[in-house]
Image (tube, rainbow, N blue to C red; front, side):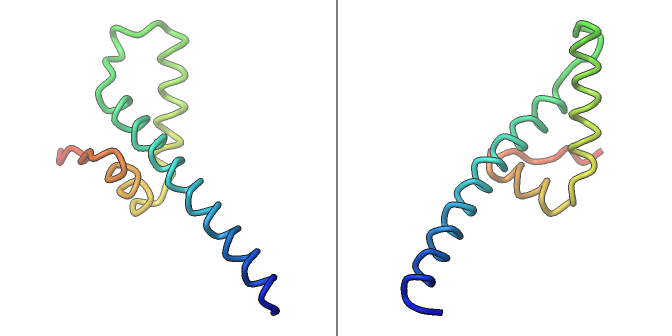
Length: 79
């Protein structure tokens, strides 16, 4: 690879790392929201959306979910 290709690759990696950081914050905030949501006080449509979000969060690798929680300075409950 020449110098320009290396520079372009480096820039692309930096963009991807920044995007990952932003996505981890979104996932972390969503996980905290779901963990603290009271199903009884939510409208039916919101419950359905929360269930879909919960399933998506639960499908994540544990390490990714932990990174997401760390990004918003949250810790999972130890139930």
